[in-house]
Amino acid sequence: MKSEKQFWYEVGQNMRLAREKRKANEREREHAEKAREEPIVTPDIAPKLRAALEKAKGSIK
Image (tube, helix red, strand yellow):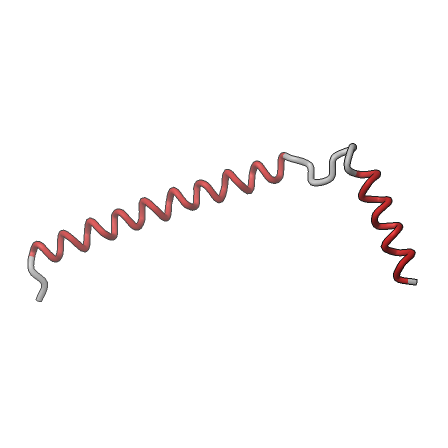
């Protein structure tokens, strides 16, 4: 059987781990929301990307 000190230590550890997990989930959620808001291909990148893709297509043939 666990001592009272050991019991409360484990309770504290579990609370700390739960808090860290909650914060990590929050950070992940914020990161996902931010990624959705920002366009991946911006208008200034699109022509360069299109040209690179066309060049790559030409080299495959």
